[in-house]
Length: 480
Ligand code: 4UW
Image 1 (tube, helix red, strand yellow):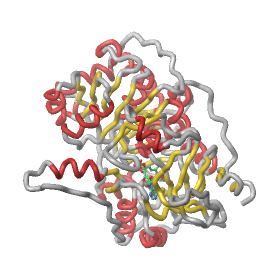
Image 2: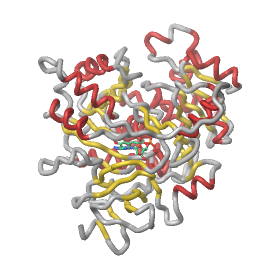
Image 3: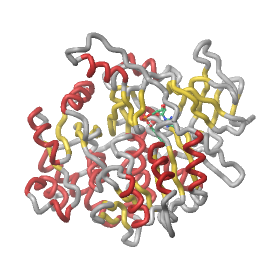
Image 4: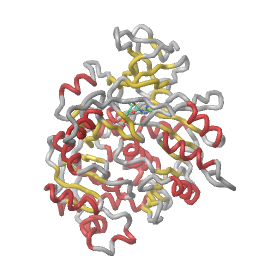
């Protein structure tokens, strides 16, 4: 452990060689090299249901068209805040990249949120919303609340453009506008604000900069690709996990596109459809949360022929997967490389990733620290820094650490200390090989299918019920 753990300082260093982060200022500069590559017409994004796709050569012109249309028709410019209330869609990455092009601030949210929940999150950001993209069903809801303009995004171009309801989006995506000039963007400029309940209390807006996402692209996605020869531009990823959550956002809208991989987009999780999609598109890589892992294992029992044989890697994270779930999966899919990863909204998904080699198959671990990352394991009673094998609160330090919680200096200060350590609220230990194990949670957060639920937010909802006088919500770890 001499190189990666220093007992004098209590600091764990990544075992990976460090990565030189690009000095480019804009996130789009960093991922834009993909647009100039020759991908031989390879598919960038494909809608699993309709088969409608966007190829790499089509991607950048689309991004430019949408960016220019947003400027000319809707006046969107640098620093404007734009809501993205969308399920997974091949257009979500296009819109996200177009907004980054303009230097706008993207606020992605779950499209299933109620208007009052959306309102609450927006109020929290104290930001004027200049525009919202959402599904057609949400348009009236948002307009009645006063968010104008609202652009309805269709599921795919082929069927939905016959109807007038998507005319604004149609204009954006087909428009021949004068190209707008890109503003000067710096790495410390805000790219997105994502909801997170952090370690305590109600939801907060985690401010993530262009520099944070550049770190996510380089340290989380591109570094891993450099380690695995099969994670090349030949890879076909299945995007079931939501792109409004940090895991899907950093992976499907940025990281994978910067590799030239293909992303098969499923709008929602549906077990039998998922199996068909894997075979139909020859999916090789599947990022999941533990409930999907269980669904795959269950499905394996009834499989015949070559079904699901294209899968090469399944990576699970966002919530604990217990050893039984993992053993069952690995037993059912011996040909698949299974790893876990760990990250947080506040670290822009940069954390740890499993690196299984023939010698090591540490399935129960969430992996090794990403390059350029440091950690401490801290006894939360006496503040001592703990060596490998000892369990304490995990602290992380690295270039993915968010700028702040918007308009919440107290929460920011209690989460990121003066030395830049992000207090994760997770209880963990490193083993003698530097692999991290998450064993429990110190913080107040409930994870449902990988989504965060703040106990404080639930209390706020419950207390509105006329028959409820007082309420206290607490997490309960349910062992499957
Ligand atoms: N095991 C146990 C895990 C694990 C975990 C997360 O909603 P957020 O803010 O963010 C996420 C991000 C997940 C993620 C990022 C990058 C990556 O490579 C990956 O690989 C699979 C996953 O979920 O919630 C953060 C909180 O979620 C818990 C933990 O409590 C953390 O603080 N968590 N991953 N593998 N628990």
